[in-house]
Structure formats: C-alpha cells, structure tokens
Length: 132
Image 1 (cartoon, one colour):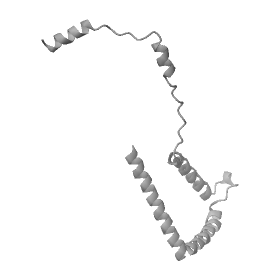
Image 2: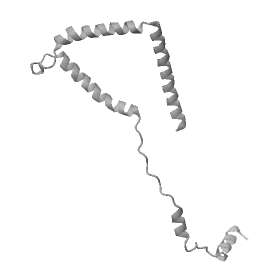
Image 3: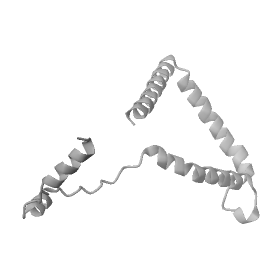
Image 4: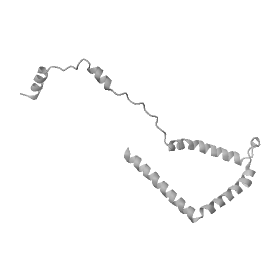
C-alpha cells in the first residue's frame, strides 16, 4: 500500500472533531488584553542633535549683530564695544581659567574624569550594539 492511499483511507475513516459548545467562550475569557504601549523617553542626544542647527543660526546672528554698527541697531552695542570691552573681559577670564587649570591637582582630576567619561561612553556604545 502506498503512503498516499493509506493517508486517504485514514482521513476517510476518521471523523471530524468539533469543539465543545462553550469552547469559544472559554478561549475568549482566557485571552489577556494587550497592555498599552508606554511612551518611550527620547534619548538626550536626539534633543541635542535637533538643537544644533538652531544654535548655529543663533550664534551667527548674534555675531553679525554684535560686530555691526548699523544705525537701526542702536540698542545693541556695536563693534567698538565688542572690541574694547568684551575682548579684554574674555582675555582676563581666559587668563584666570588658565591659572586654575595649570594646577597639578586640577589637571589630574580633569584627566581622570575625562578618561572615565570616555570609557563610560565607549562601554555604553558597545553594550547597546551587542544587545540588539
């Protein structure tokens, strides 16, 4: 006897099974409702990445207004204020910051902090890559 004939006979002789009368109610009562999707918190770098073009445009506009002596921008200090007052203030600020960072202990702390931060970022990057 061939396999096809045997299967045909088996199908013809076996009766079709029908589910019980309350089968659908039992199945439907055991189906769990799917939980609502929780809102996903956007990572910080996405906010940072979307803000970069706006910040660049604002910096360019501020630089243009700060260095121009246009008559309708009288309320904004002009180029003279920018060169005489702001540059000397920034020069003294940078000199003070240089003196602070020239300290051996501050430099060592910054070096350790920067290295630890870099290692943390690299670890987060690779752990995210391997888990996906």
